[in-house]
Amino acid sequence: MAIPTGSGSEVLRNFGINGSGGATSLVDFGGTSGTGSVRTAGNTAGVVAVPANVIITILNIIWKASADITLTATIDWQGSGTDITFCYFRLPDNSAFVFSEKIVLREGDKLELYTTGTADIYGSFIYQDWT
Image 1 (cartoon, rainbow, N blue to C red):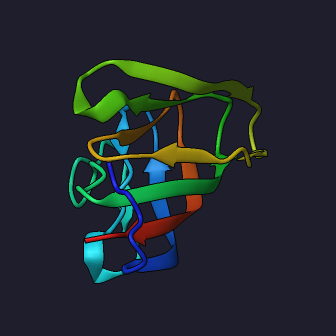
Image 2: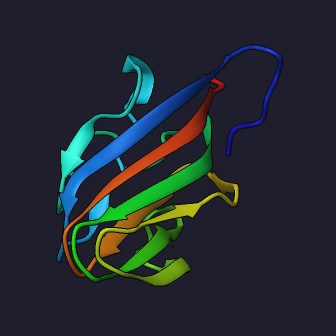
């Protein structure tokens, strides 16, 4: 777990998942190289587990549905395979849903997003690096 000591960085970043549907997508937080990348459904590439000495605070997640969908958002607790579901919602065709509760992720956590149909997902977060 990152414990701030007065040195490090705190940067606003974003992520995107284009055409999510029918597969669990892991959010790519982008590591020290900058913002997360836009990924496609079923993503497992990039920095998907929170690195050591990093704290990530999710600011919001926006789903835009292209069809009637059910969305699920979970945290894989420290990469252990124990999923904690924090959002489950049915979204009608051509509508959007904004989740704006703050969530803190720590070392090893993974943010998993799933939709039963096609949707675009966008989110923003604070990346605090204390390495």
